[in-house]
Image 1 (cartoon, rainbow, N blue to C red):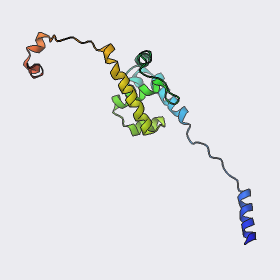
Image 2: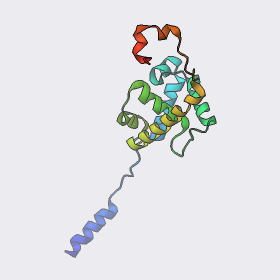
Image 3: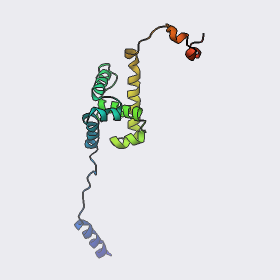
Amino acid sequence: MIATGVSIIEQERNRIYILREPRINAIAQWEFYIDSILNRDDKNCVEQIRMKPVVLYNLCDVLTSCDLLRSTQNVFIREQVIVFLQIIGQNQRFYFISGIYYKSIETIHRYFRIVFKAVFKLYKHLIKDSGDIVPAEIMNNPRFYHYFKV
């Protein structure tokens, strides 16, 4: 019995262990994916996020300068905005996006909501209130009448 135990221990000592390494370098993969969206060409970028890279950079600058978004340790502003635009523009599911960026569904959902709230707060800067004036061609058009009933 003791001899059997000693032989098992010796077998375990002499066993060669293979160190496991991650199969995928997630950070390198999502950085490559974002670069492939932004740096390939404008047409590809418009197909993926529905805007040109210059417009994306301007949007990120506006969101940063208005102090509506901040980079975190794990997710940069540019990535937050791109994820938001892919979900909105491509009608992608959180599950699918989480697989692309190697993030949890909860993380994708959290940053989607953060960017959504930030973009929604931009309406003060982008949309001008016309007051109560309704153009006559709209007011007199029966097609729009039910929207302007008094």
